[in-house]
Amino acid sequence: MLKTKRKRLTDRSVRAVERLAKIETSIIDLADEDLLDLADIFKAEPRAPIGDMAFLEMARRKMSL
Image: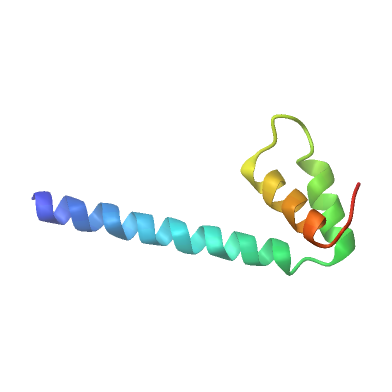
């Protein structure tokens, strides 16, 4: 039973990391206008993690709202 539970938790963690990587890649692949729109949606403080990702990508591209 413990072995099955550990495998299930490991599988869930792997899927979560894969989803997060896909989200990050999607944000990086956004066109400038779409990135600005996303950042505008999530600009409220405290910022959600997706907003942090958007603002980090904007900083990398030297963009601001």
